[in-house]
Length: 105
Image (cartoon, rainbow, N blue to C red; front, top):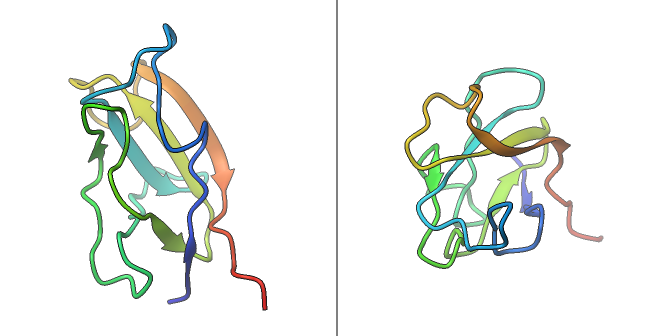
């Protein structure tokens, strides 16, 4: 599997609609267009997967480097801390068809 740095939407810090850090919120990652969980990783060797959902820290951040699979693309959903599963009505926002960025040759 090829890994690439992952571009997080809205920068590294995720915020609520009120502009408050999304502390404790759940970031679900799935294969684009499906409900199949697709993991993000803390290392470029794809040895250490983040939990899915990723629970954001007190500042609304993942708290480390983020790598993803070069293909297929990801769908992201930021849900309230108590929401489950990834596809429900409590999503704060969704981003679809997000690709990990291949390093320049």
